Length: 360
Ligand SMILES: [Zn+2]
Image (cartoon, rainbow, N blue to C red; front, top):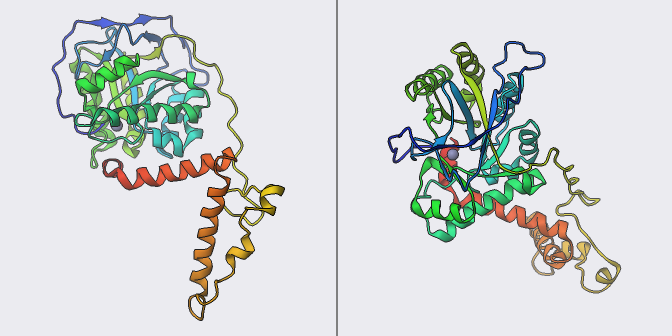
């Protein structure tokens, strides 16, 4: 989240959410842990909009109950540090992951889920223009983010129907689209300004505590697992919350979630020469249409000469890879998927200045 453009004053009414029994009475190895006292099951059809910063409805938290959420990850090493703190304190939270980050760090997505946290989504590229976008781009960002996190997790059922708009830049169009997909849109009850460049861990703890207290000693706290100050603040914040009598509550989606994720697919194997992508040839294609690597690397007559041999070979290699990729596309799903991922990565890196600025 960055720059809350519009903040609506909260109202106390409109509180929903089913309550389940306590999920962690004790924390192995840490008798002083704050733990997680219970879960609240959220059904998007009963509670489509969540968070008093922008909506009239929020989680049914009782006095001195806090639900912690993390946006924008995963991003090592900060996500890792935060996961370690949460594990040491037996705290379960809700994540809102960015699709392109999930593509880049699928192992971390799996680790988050396997540790008992909930996977919500936060768009594919984190554009800070959700309140101005055409519907087609909204659809692409929402659906793309969900698809990326599902792919990283390896099981679509692992992803909750929870979405938080980047920058909290909500619009009726976005909310309507999410409603058609039975996805709950999450705002928050409190932020701790942990996205500011100069903020210290101490400031984050102070702001989080004072704002939770000001909102009736409860609330959904929005943090970011991509910042070092947040990772440093979290152990202190959890100790402070415990010392002041707070309990942690985790919001979970309705329905069954997979207990375990499937094993990830093995990594792509490089060809004998260490090239990329993996080159796949068949007897028939090799004999007829498959381009020949050694032929392709031979400088063409009249175009090579002293001083430009290296460049010629480089160009030839580049052309060969393209040619082979085109040749094998549609036949080899591994190559096709790899090319598609690489192109998508290059495209999003080039077009999304907002995210670059955001990451700092
Ligand atoms: Zn964000």
